[in-house]
Length: 429
Length: 164
Image 1: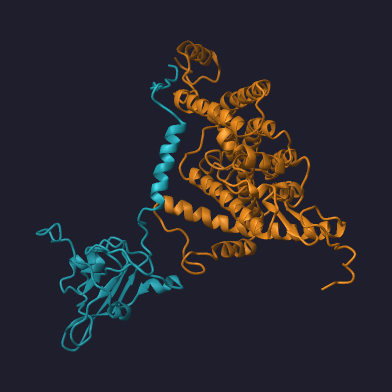
Image 2: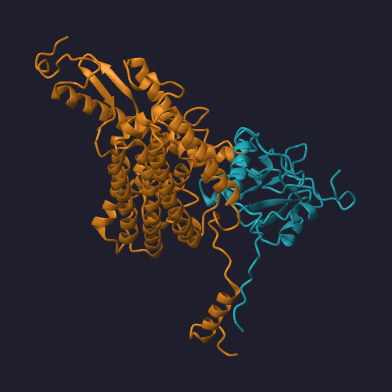
């Protein structure tokens, strides 16, 4: 079995320790890249079908069921083929380099983000322990935030380069939306990082395996993160950049064939990444629920398989939630979007950081160390906060994204202003 | 006059966003398992009304000749002017159509031709699947009209308006 050339690279090592030789690391990384990329792309393709199916079921229809047998499994392949054969339009007046670059710019970051997300328990092999993550970056989460913000460039560039007013409006909206919700998204994860004490995603997962899933202890952070994730992925109710009733197709109005398809794939890739992040940060990642032995080892191949399966199941649940909400809620108005982001989510996220940090400080002063009791106290406080937020404060305009009523005096003042303006409609009277 | 903006007072104490969203999600989730209403078209077809007016059909006598006596009523009544009729006469003095063509593209499917026909020869059909490779294919000549087999429209009867 010894391939002579590779022999010195593949040193046999302790299966429960990281591999000792660089060759093993190199080969393992390439294999992981290939597997993850393949599964990811196939998954994204199937997601387009899943979206159509879920939308159909919610609307009491069957959805695509002709191509490739009863379930329509080959529909994504047919769509892909169609997109390859369609005409590539290049409207007059576009900024060519940027026009071509934009779909790539929106596609690559969505794909790259995945390389730091751990998707399974480490796999012990005879060459050493292989971590189930493409690149175990120490800055893990920061890398995700950085790349997540890059995705918006694709959308904005597409809007700008198209030389089309609808595209431009879509791009502008997108940039405003991303900036607004990026802040809340980053802020909402700070309680998670405070609890984990580290930004490495593996630490976050291990902390959850010991101290309970973060969704139990930090429900409000999860809520903010989820809403922000919807906004970041441009999914309904936050799909203002496309808003087909107002902007035709928003930023990708001028795109056709495979360039359009790339935007489409990027949207679903973003969805997968956002779901994976929610699972990793709040739902214990690949942690098998109600067990603790899966996080210390000794690891085994079966455990790896099980944890990957659990992870995929959790991610799929969130993907379904994305679609479920898309076919439930209508789109926000632009002012509602802004007021929800800046007037509700950001203050809430900031005050939540203060509350969680204060609680951790108090618990430390009281001499309670992270463990079951610690988690119970956090959970109890969380229940109270959730009730306050969702039952007491969820009245009228406190949570509602709808802009509040204007004070009558303010309205009168504005009307007076309007009557003096040259733009006023009352020219004659 | 300033623009009047209608401001609806909202019952602030009663409305909620999160809980109503969850209610909405419960509703859409229920619909996932509901019976689907789609008609799987080429395999199953929705029933059409007995008064449906589709592409024409010319009925024939026992000998297989068209019932038409070329009286000229249908081209006269036709509001779309889509029927072309050239009458002929045989040795016994019976009139018959030399040319009888209906341009189905011009036809508005009003059914007047069927109503006006004294011989009950021309009918509009209970049929809707028409496709051709050329526009000329939609000019139905006498041969084409007599060879159609689909059921014909049961016209509106003033005595029996509900068709019972």
